[in-house]
Length: 132
Image (cartoon, rainbow, N blue to C red; front, top):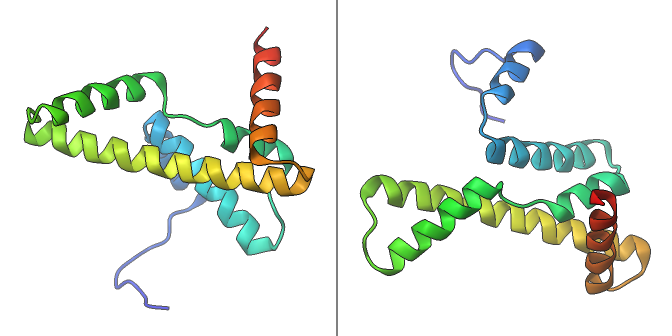
């Protein structure tokens, strides 16, 4: 593995402080990637609750609205350079969340021995019941 010249690893407090500086979307992506990495490192798989959270993950409402506005402006050919950068960043984030959601749904479907469609319907129903 290549070493970084002059690189000093962060301590736990510095890492936590850095995570607190992330936007809600970035924090959610960080959490999903951390869970996935933990499973890879210890050979275990995430628990069902973690998979359900990942399967239900979405861009925060504000980010979703911003992305929709940027998509519309892009289709009209009216994006400024700053908007293009925002659009690309939000689109990448949405793709990462979608990929994590698909992976979590597939894992849940294997565990439950059900179709992805059945698992998705069940967890969405459970989520609505929890909200009530």
